[in-house]
Every structure is written in structure tokens, then in C-alpha cells.
Length: 317
Image: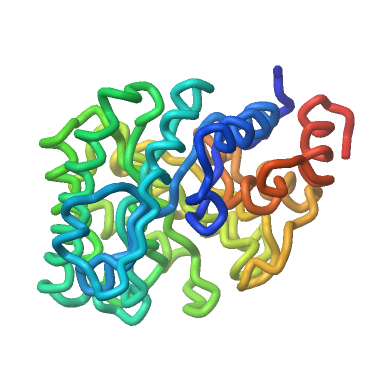
């Protein structure tokens, strides 16, 4: 489809929606996404690793079996089915690796914690690459950094850069052609000014060993934080300036197509189009959290999907 612009090109998905799907269900979902012009899928995480041990993993992992919490939950076909269907349909997949909820309480300010999580990250990268890259060379497109950073101004960017640099070094040694995508957010709790946001991210870019092709993709935070679009634009403009200090890093924006801090429901398309029109001034690509969750009803179209198709065809909505 020759789509109206601006338009979405990628979507996130979380395991709770899809980790029991077989390949045929993924194919059906990808068909709906492709109908909407979306050919990038980001698996937000594929493991949960509280304090470096696995409580959940979305593929058959020997490392997880040796570093497990007492009640390890395994979805052995999650990653493989997503990639198999993507290879067939021409979809590009970014694989999220591990995440742990203690991130939100500031555990990243501890070297031992960083080392335990990066060790799990790197072991997963090795396993996933060896299992799937040769088998699905086109679908296996890159990595997603599941740890959600934000516009703090208390020096946390130094810890985040330290953690990310350890992973980037390993990703490079494994296959330097695979980009890393990250999607930080603009906090609704910290109330930082756009200038403070820009200075903090400039510091982060100074400290981080980004490679050519890595992707900095800010959430626009219109959904969760409830910011007005014109205020968000001021933050985005400053973040783009920070990213431009590393011109070989790509700058995308993640459109939030939901409403409310807990993602109570889908956002009206009229609002999402306004978000996209703001974001296209700065970003190379627009992706969303999440077309899969909010504009599709899992494996069948809903009214939001139908409205979006009309928009793409220039028929209004």
C-alpha cells in the first residue's frame, strides 16, 4: 500500500499477548500488521531475570535452566514461532532480551547488579543468535534494549551508559551488523524541563559507545504521562539535538497509542495522527506501543484498525 504519511512502521508486543501462539497465529497477526504498512516487530522482552536469575524465558534456554528461580516459567516456542512467521512474511524482528522489575527501584546503581543482568543478557544473546540467526537471517534483524531509561537528571545516565556499554561490546563481538534499539520515556513524575531533558541525554550520548546504525527511539509519553503534544515536542527537539551529537545513531520516535498510566484503552486515531505529525518533524521512522495491543484485537481487526486503514488510503477516519 502506498500509505498516507505520516504513518507507523513498527509495533511492540509483550509476551502476555503472544507467547503461547504457534507460527500460524503469528502469520495471521503479521498479515494484519502488513495490511497497515507495519513491517517491524519488537518483542519487548523474552525473559524476566530478578537479580540475574530467570523467572520467565521465551525459548528453550540452557543458561536459564542453570540460573533459575524456584518457579521458572518457560514458553519454549515464543521466539522461534515469531521469527519463523516473520521470515515467511518479510517482517523484521527486534528481540528484546531480559528485564527485571527491581530496575524501577534503582537497582541499576549497583555494579554487582549490573554485572548479573548483563551476564544474563549476553548469555541470552549468544543462545538466541546461535539458535535462530542462520535459520531466519532476514527476520532476525536486531536487539531491543528492554531496560526503560527516562529523563532523570540525578546522574543515573552514568549507570545506564555503563550497563549498556557492557552489552554493546558483546553485541559487537557477536555480530556488529545487528543494531540495538532503545526506547526511553519522558517521565510524568519528574517534571523536568525540556532543557534539563536535553542536557541529561547529551551526557548519556557522551558516555555511551554507540555503533553506527544503533537506534535511539524515544517514547512520546503522550499516553502514559498525559503530556500535551506541544510540550512533548519541546522535549523531543532537545533529545534530537542530543542524538545529533552522534550522527551515526538513528533517531526514531515511539508513538503511544493508548490513554492513561495503566494503558486503560486505545487512543483515538485523531490524537495519534497529531502525535505522528509532531514526531515526523524529527524522526526517521515512527513506531508505536502498541498497534498489536490496542489497534488490533489479537488475531482479528477492530474498529481502530479499520479506521487506520482508511487513514492510510486518504479516506479520512
